[in-house]
Image 1 (cartoon, rainbow, N blue to C red):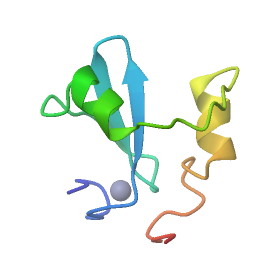
Image 2 (image 1 turned 45 degrees about the horizontal axis):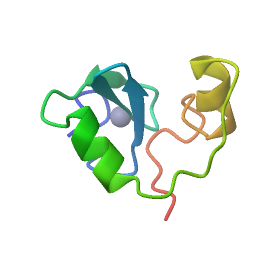
Image 3 (image 1 turned 180 degrees about the vertical axis):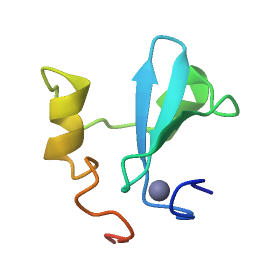
Image 4 (image 1 turned 90 degrees about the vertical axis):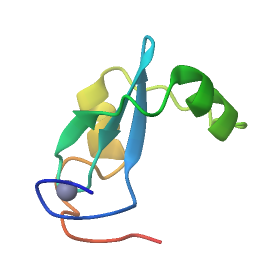
Amino acid sequence: MCTACRARRDWLLINHSRNVWIVCRCSNQWLEPEISRADFDALIATPDGTTYPSVEQGLAALGFDGAFAGTYLD
Ligand SMILES: [Zn+2]
């Protein structure tokens, strides 16, 4: 659960080397040690291939810059 807004889903997962970070719609983010890189790769069988110049630009493009805080987009 997000400690900032209490959301329980609709998160973005970010691979950074061997770590997986979770980013919430409220823009809170945290390291998730229970999800390994192997878990992530198994979960994301078909990545969409979109690459962003920076994490910040990716977050904004995907709506994780806080613009949708408190919202679930299904
Ligand atoms: Zn949150």
